[in-house]
Length: 113
Length: 227
Image: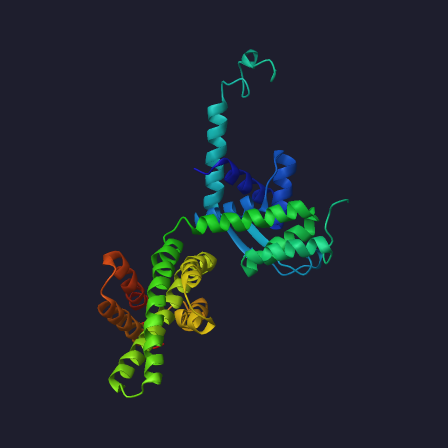
């Protein structure tokens, strides 16, 4: 099963669809996920996902906006989508019955409630 | 926005300089991402340096950097320094006393062996792990600098200690270009390595095997058939 950060990257790539590349994915992870994301972590994780066959990457044509430099485009493969779904369903299943999932709301610690 | 870099500005130059640590394709992609997001200088530097550090760490998880630096560059530098001194010393003494033709032949063959071996070692270090050449250079340069600091002599005798450097560096350059050699050249170099092993015949099995494995590696990975 994929890890948490791998899942974030798969989800960001799926969200951005044809516009999925390093800078855009980082921005989405940072704004939506509320966490910092270094390009180092992003590209190393992308390499790992590509080695597992969960994403495909390729270089786009250079653009003026980037000083004439290419983008590393990302596409989630079928296997990647299945792995992401597996992670998502596992999180949902294990969260059922917890205070932060559904039910037992009165169990939440004071600082969270 | 304050603290952001414009492409071409002084801050951008720092990030571009740091990005030299990345391979060319990745450098282009990362600099493009940073240019697009207009990151601050520190964020840009952190991004580039963290990626370079992670790439290096990933390389060192495999056997190749260890084999190239500790398994070859370091023992090879010790071995080649000894051979360089012996070979160049014998040639120099012949020039002073030209009567001993047999001694000259022996010295020249040693010199040839040093040249072949240094080229082979440079090639293997470079082709086995080109991403960590800096570590192999340190592993080779450390013993060289240590011996030079102990070496009693003038500039010319310094050169005697480092006869192997030129063919070694040439081998590194070729290894960066071609990862494999043709079978005949690889077999020739492996034979030269085995000869060096037989002639030196000292230093224990670990030292001796470090002399043999580059030749075996080259032969095992050589291009077969028409090149």
